[in-house]
Image (cartoon, rainbow, N blue to C red):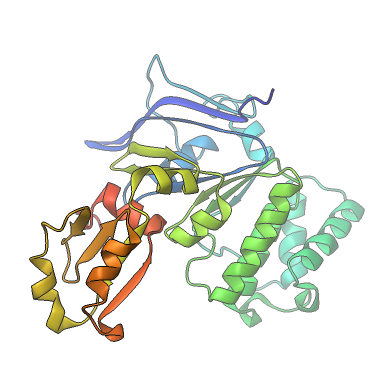
Length: 310
């Protein structure tokens, strides 16, 4: 029977009076993708940094962390050696070309030159960057830079890949290419930790997601299961301004939940036909009738109002 490769319980992290992580616990299984979701300031990045030793958790008798058997408080270097980390910034050396950026990083891990050259060739092929191997960093597109940063994190064949907002600002084609590469890596046995603001990205990649807010865990589980068990499957969006005031008053419709938090009301129901009855009173440009998604669940659980630090 498989055991978790990451096991976390009762973790706190404070910055002065701010509790960035509050009694958090979870487990990550081998060869899976585990995603942290939450508003800005929820504690996602802080928790990731605690796992690989960049940030130190608060001392507490009941807290435990094991990352492939190591405790980041005492075995920071061991965890960093088995981990590849992709931060939000593309911190590449602009003065070097693609291959040189990877060669410098290979030296940090003590890779022998023949092994490093072979691995660099494999990764450039895998991320479709071979034709850019001699290009300076400033000549690359945003998507190419992001793929190169991920390739760099994989040079030493880590057991764990940590991705902090990996596709922010990228166009859909590049985003989908990176998703497919990450799926292939997971099939080969890599365990992935992910933070993202793209709900579709989390749904596509993650075997398990943990939604957190203000440092605390709100809910955890497989995305499809969380959707099925925690939100109505159908939603009707009202778009046309002339209908909004009239529809906002429709809060007593049988079997329908009205989310009236913003200007455009959303109607949720377990019955498609109930929403279709409302939609039939409108013209096609006045509504959008669709299945609910992870973003609907996220907003239901965390609220639609911005936190003070957003």
